Image (cartoon, helix red, strand yellow):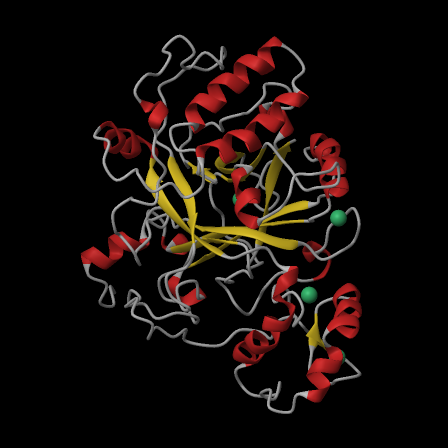
Length: 415
Ligand SMILES: [Zn+2]
Ligand SMILES: [Zn+2]
Ligand SMILES: [Zn+2]
Ligand SMILES: [Zn+2]
């Protein structure tokens, strides 16, 4: 049955994707001048109700992709920004699930996490995709709406999709990727919108007859911005070629400034990070200055409501300070809990909706930190700038099968 995956390559596909492209040393992490002394008094005080032992957390950091092919879907990447690398490239979400329920615009791709579950055949490959509306006003609305998600179908401006595939599937070889740039998917995917490169592009522009679009909104921006350009350029590959994907990629280049900057997400165990940092080598090349990170984090302080928030914030900050560039914290364990920046605005168990497909309860799986916005170049200069304290993703405990390829999960936002 095992079609040639040797043990070593198997390992690389398991767990959250430990980057298999560059298992090099960690000299990209920032120096930890503040590492030498923790104030033990603040440690673990934040959760009075639950102080079980700490679950191991995998941290995600962003890096520019090493190769042009590093983030292709056949390599099962974890990535942030750019376009999604759809795991099932044919049955991608469509219709209302691609749009912000509040303003109706197509959602923008935030990140995806490759997180297979090895115990089950159906989850041999498994990726979680996170999308959001880039409008801060929609995110604010959703912050109120999310409290109602348990009881009714509320409006969402942040959506999560879970996609999983068995080892043997029509889209990818059962052999582990060679990771040398020669890996090819077994079949091509549906043609995507030429403006966003994200959602299905099932309609053609009536004017240039080349560009595909996913929605009215993207047809309009395409008409305004690059329709002419496409009409004039005759050397562009014809959209009717069999490989819709390459065609899309060509045209997307013109549109890509509408997307967030693209990064690969690489992983590091939080616990190992401690160990490595105690022998203070390799931390002399900070990615961004410590100061900058502190500033963006400190801007959160303004919103505090009271002492419990301040205390919660202190321990949040202390924990994050161990690796200030982390953009993601992942832990899929029954007892895992998110690290909340503030104690107000946290959901109780009853606020998290059950899986809408199988009815199982949903558990915390990962959270996204505001540092990601810094890497995306999102400025935090006025009330309309996109900003959040954390986005917490909950997924079906059973990681169930359902008739749809992309199953919607739940995200909680703390602003
Ligand atoms: Zn919106
Ligand atoms: Zn589009
Ligand atoms: Zn056009
Ligand atoms: Zn389920």
